[in-house]
Length: 409
Ligand SMILES: [Zn+2]
Image (cartoon, rainbow, N blue to C red):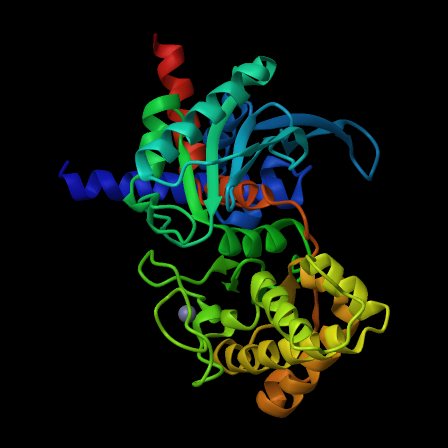
């Protein structure tokens, strides 16, 4: 057999295993007969694949009373609580670590400071923190199947490489390989906004649609575009840098090097800085001294005109850029995440008004624009990366092969 044929056989095995697992995950409890019918795979293939999935503990058999009465039929369901994985979100100067089971229940969580910015020191801290977290939760460590890391910046998710991140000096860092080498576990690395968009699709506000866009506003502005249930990408490279659409040619310098990008106006820091400048120039506001984005939203909700006007401008700028993405992608739903959503009563009407006037009317008609479901769950992104690896079959095959090796030994 030549190499190409072997690769294709492996690929077919992965695709078929993924199809069977995905069907059991989505429709279970479901019988083998129904899986074969719906997947159009030969019953013998379904039997073989389900035997392998049962051996790894990824699915389980359950007895179900047939609707017609009589003998209890055996159905299949995914096993959600047997395996665990670690999900890490690397934020600005901080990291969140969660221990999840496959149903998405978090069994432990930890938030740690990350003072390092230089690549080697940062990677060391990251690996050591994961290591201590695993040591603290030894009961789950026997059944750990993956580590996922999400962070802001540009990532090559196929290779698990961090190309660039704004808060740390990571450049072309092979983070997934470094994690795999240390823990002997499959590792997945992704952009946090893109991963959160996928989390919303699997578990949250966009479960009901296949095409959606998540706009995330934190220390920058990013978008995660889901097309046909998958993160929209170009040849494994990130897309969705909505924060760097120029909205003001005479605006402030952006960290990307250009001028007047959306995120020079629409980010938590930009909003707070703008208000501080206006207040120092004598504009009246109930806010004084030092304040946060949460204070700005609270003040705006209490009727502070200055905060209201600044957020109204933010809504307009966001709306302009979202209208462009609607024309380009014709999504079924737009969702927004970030601390500014505390002022969604001010932002959403402004955004909707922009879209009404600037997006194609047939694209914008009846388009839901709402708050994201996960507003303060930073490690949900990693959960989505592991779920994707299960659904596309790559992690399933790895677990099946590991089990087969254990049995041989
Ligand atoms: Zn920029």
